Length: 367
Ligand SMILES: [Cu+2]
Image (cartoon, rainbow, N blue to C red; front, side, top):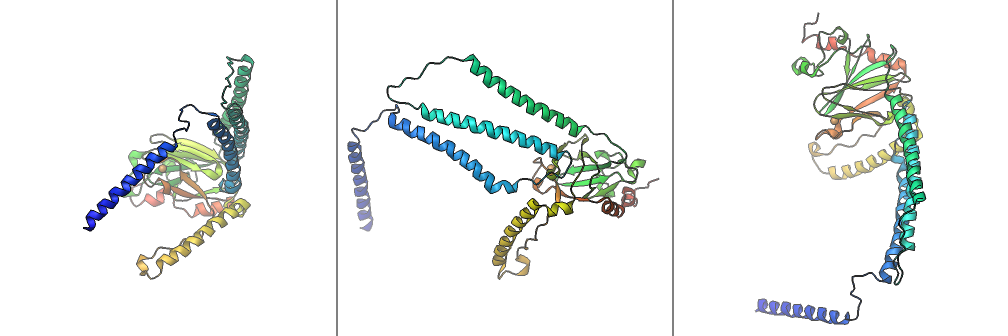
């Protein structure tokens, strides 16, 4: 019985909705159903155009004001000052041109919005205008590209002197290793075919090459401040990219070939940790970590020790070598710490590292 009543109620509700739709349709008899925009539509669109151009500019200014502190701090390498300058000029040009063109574009869309009885002016072409908007961008773009090309040539033409440091960066899924050239300052030969994991030769260094004996393989890069470091990059498996954002350096690591890049670090890790931008950044990160630790503590409450989530350590600034090519599932975790220090501190550190010969002597018979 209840089921029949429910069905009857549902049918009645459906009939009521159907009748109400019919009444609504009747009330709209005199409405404008034309597909052609009328003055009201054109006005709405015109004002929306103005509102949109205001919106994108407010958004830009707010974004800069609110999030510019997540940008990189000052460059810690010599050439980085130049690339930063080029980037700043490009940004200034883009911002200037984009503001003017967007404001004009949206203002004209508003000013010349459709109006009943108004006819568009037929305007075929204007050679003078076309020359202006072709020549000005050509000059500006050529200036940007040519100055960028000169800077790139300056940065990438590497000449090695005896005083420079030679370091190999070896990339593989998913980690980095660095090889220092050692006492003789010449890297020994290496080849993927010589890789022998069982004999602790993960980089495929040629054990018979005299230059390889004093090479030093490490899991952390140390650089003396003010001294040119020449990086030779190799990859074992796929394309990786050696990215050191604080030094404005990036170079692809290509399987089967050696690519190189050099720079002079100018700010030690210790000095950078005192830099105002970095201090603010570190404080911000640690505030987030502190808040997360409170959440973790709450979730851990009552759980047995082995099921508890570990607390986050306070963050301390370090220069990093990252991978900037999506090279596989653990790509995000491919990083190596870089420490820039005084010459003396660097020498102390390198003295304590094992040479290639010392670390593989047990496995190979080296003459
Ligand atoms: Cu990678």
